[in-house]
Length: 144
Image (cartoon, rainbow, N blue to C red; front, side, top):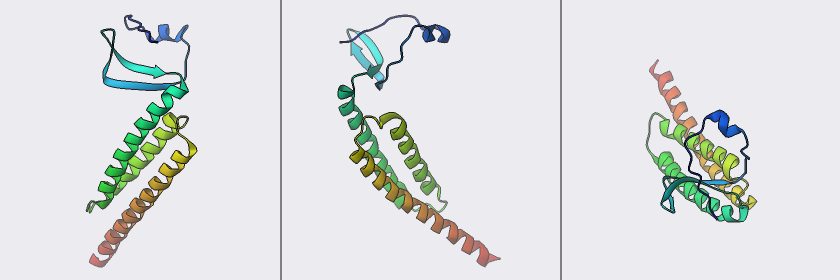
């Protein structure tokens, strides 16, 4: 079942009146989905049994990309430490996204597994960043 509502853009005050807020998973696409010749950019799935597999697939794709990015950032030979801070920022951003958007669709085991791996990568990035800062401090102390 689908419904397409073709209207001109309403003002913000018009949208508030009479609209019901349904919880659900929003599938958005920059290209959009074609339904009866109309381009639909955002689809909200209200039924949780339908939304769960889609949300799990979306978060697993994001998680795999994040793991690849984090390993690349941690392995890189960056002398300034920007790669470590970027890795820490990406981990925190992903955790907040999972917490706010996907938590209701994931099982506790999946959340624990992702948290455990991200925690290990976060500790590694922090320890390497601290080592780098200590080496800079030691070099600065010797040059005086």
